Length: 223
Image (cartoon, rainbow, N blue to C red; front, side):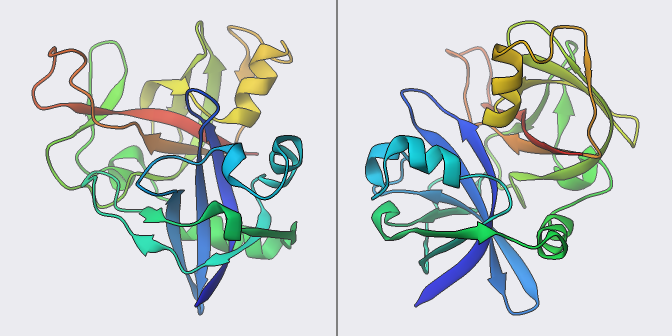
C-alpha cells in the first residue's frame, strides 16, 4: 500500500540528521506521523535517492509527499506518531494548495498548550516539559501564538494566545536559518499566527531528573 500526504516540518538534529513530520491523508481526515528509518533513527540526507541539496529544497512544509504505508513504531510512549519508512521509497510532489495545507494544519491545532500536551509542566525558568515515564496522547502540534521573541543560544520565548509564556529551544530549520543569517536577532519579535511545538526525546539530564523529561521545543511557525 502507498500513502499520500503533506510535509509539516523539518527540525534539526545532530550529525546531519533531521526529524520529518508529515500529515497523511486518511479519507476526509489526516494522520500526523514522524518518519524514522530502520531500526528507529531519524532521517538523514544520505538515505534518500536525491542529493542533499535537492532534498533540502524539496523537504519543505506544505510540499506533497508520496511514500509506502509506514509501519507503527512503539519504542517511545511519549511520541505516538513515530513510524518506520524506507527513505529511498519516498517521492516528492508539488506545493499543495493553500486550502489543503490549512486543512492539515487545522487537524493538529489546539487552543492552548495544556490542550496540546495535557501532562505539561513548567520549570521556574520558563521551560515546559512532559514527564517521560508515561504515555502522551501526542508529541507535536500547533497552538495559536501572540508573540515569539528570539533569545540567546538559539532559544526563543513564546507567548501563546492563551497566555502561556514558555522558553523553547528553536529546532525549526527555517527559523534557525533566519537566526544564523542574522535576518532576526536576539530580542526581536518574530510574527506568527501559529507556533508548532514538539517534544524532545525523554532525558534525565545525567541523572538530574527522575522521571526523565521531554522538553517542549519550537519546531515551526505559520504566519
